[in-house]
Image (cartoon, rainbow, N blue to C red):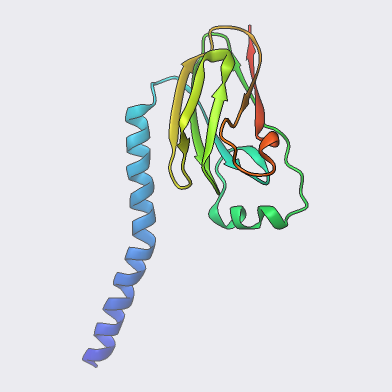
Length: 154
């Protein structure tokens, strides 16, 4: 009878860790981002992938594995903001080291965006227009597809 009780306790403990650890990590990340991102900022996540280019949003790890096998075509992301907005980009990579360049606002990430890490880029969209962003680190045969557009409305 004691062995069943011990097995049950260990099972509950294991389930608590499996569910609790990711939840605790997400809460910690949320806390860190809240301190690093100014209030009122327009926040966008861009994930780099050599097969798909820049993708607006997070890419779960299991999706990143199948990008090369997928026949799906991904559209270049378009980010829309208003002139004067504080823009924060959370830059991620789902596969290899990427770079980032938004020349119109003098934003360059040359240290690399490592898979599993997030790089924050912040700037004020102080001029209206259409601005192209791209990867500035040769990341593979589809490097030329690593582009997107920032539209700043007047």
